[in-house]
Length: 305
Length: 244
Image (tube, rainbow over all chains, first blue to last red; front, side, top):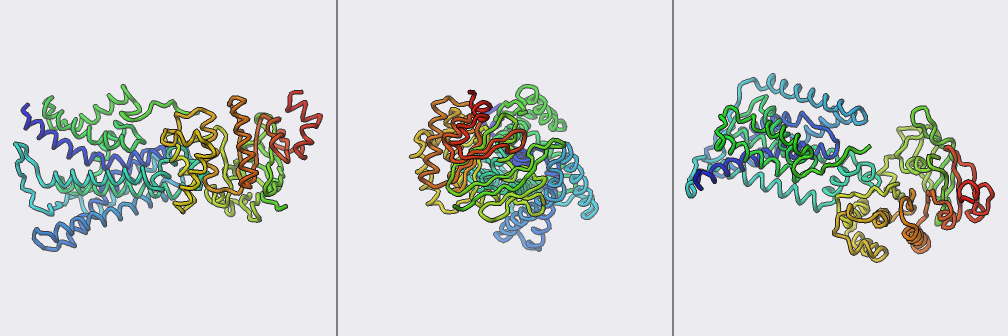
C-alpha cells in the first residue's frame, strides 16, 4: 500500500469514525448517568434526520447552490438538534423516568419499545421510500497529493471535531458539565451538593440526542433518510461506545474514530468484502468484551456491592 | 437559643423492618450535638432521613422553621432542595468524587453558590484550613489517603457555606492522630464559623468530648439524651460505649 493509498483510507476512516463518535457520545453519556443503554438513540437520530431534511428543503425552496443554501443547511441542522433534544428529553420523561427504581432490565425493554414506536411511526408518516438529502454544496471531490477528498468529508470532519471540542470543554470546565460528571460518579452525593439530578439527566439526553441528529444528517447526505436508518448506525455507534469504554466520554470519541478506521482498513487491507464490512464492528465488540470488557479507556472496576 | 433542626417523632422502615422508631431530637443553633450508638442502631439512617434520602413513615423534620421532610410524599423536599436550605451532609465513607480533582470536588460543593468570586475566596480559605488539600488541588481525589479524603469531604461540605453540617462517622477507619486532627477542625468550624454541627460517631469518647449535647441510640430509638459531659459520667454509657 502506497502512502497516498494509506492516507486515502485514513481520511475515509476518520470521516466514518467522526460520525460514529458523535452518535456514540449519546450512548455513553446516558449510560454514565443512568447505567442503561438507550436503544432508542438510533431512532432519535432518524427523527432528527427527517426533521433536518424537511426544514432544509423548506428553507432552501428551489434555490440553486450558493451561500444561502449552505446557511439553510446549517440552520436546518441547528433546528433538528433542538427538535431531537426535545424528543430525547420527552422519551426520558415518559418511558424511562417512571422506571428509574425498577429492575435494570425494565428501562432497557422500554427503550426497545420506544425504538419500534419511532421507526414504525416514521414509516407510517413518511413512507418507506428513502428520501434524498441533497448536498448543500457542490460535492465534486478534489485531489490533494494523491488523496481524493470530498467537500462532504471535510464537512463531516470539521463538524464532528467542533462538536467534540465544545462538548469536551463543556464537560471539563463548566458548572453544569462538572455536575454531569459528578452525577455519573455518585448520584446520591451529587444530590447532597444541591445538584438537581433530574435536570442533569434531561441535559444529558438533550446533548446526546442533538449530537445524534448531527450524525444522522451527515450520514443522510450520502445514504438518504429512511425510517430504519438509525438501526445499524445506532448499533455500530453502540459498539464504538463499548469499544472506547462505555460511560467514558473521551472513550466514545476514541472508540468511534478507531472503529471507523478499523472498518475502512479492514476492507482495504484484509480484503474483507465490503458487503461484510458490518461484521468488523461486531467482531471488534466480541474481541473487546473478551480481552478488556471495560473498553479501551474504561477502568476495570469490580461491580460494587 | 434558637432551635435550628427539629426531628419530630419520625419513623423509617426498610421493608418490614423499622430502622427508626419515633425519633425526636432538637438541635440548637451554634451547638455541637452528637449521636452515639452501636453499629446498626440507625444513626446513618437518621442522617439520611434529615437530608431527604430516606422516606419517612411518620413524623416531620423542620429546619429553621420550615418543614423539610414529612411522611406525605407530595410535600417532601428533594435532597438538592434541602441542601439549598443550608444543610450539608458529609456522608459515611466520605463519598468523594474519586475521578475528579480536589479542586473540582470543592467546585461541586459550591454548586449552589452562584458567585465566582465567593467560590474562589472559599476555596482559598479551605486550602488555608486544610493545607494538604491546597498542595493536592490538581490531583484526582482517588490518589488521596483516607484522612485526606475525609478532610476533602468536610471541605466540600463547607464550600456551600452551610448553616448546619452533618458528619457521619468522620473518624471511621482512620488513625487516632488523624481522627484527633479532624475533631480539632470540627471544633474550629463550630467555634469560628458558627456552623452548627451534628455528629454521628462510633468513637463515643471522642464525640462526647467534642459535643455539648449527646443522644444515645439503640435499635432505632433514642434511649438517652443529656449534656455530653453528663453522658461521659453516666454509668450505662460508660459500660456500653466507653468500654469501661
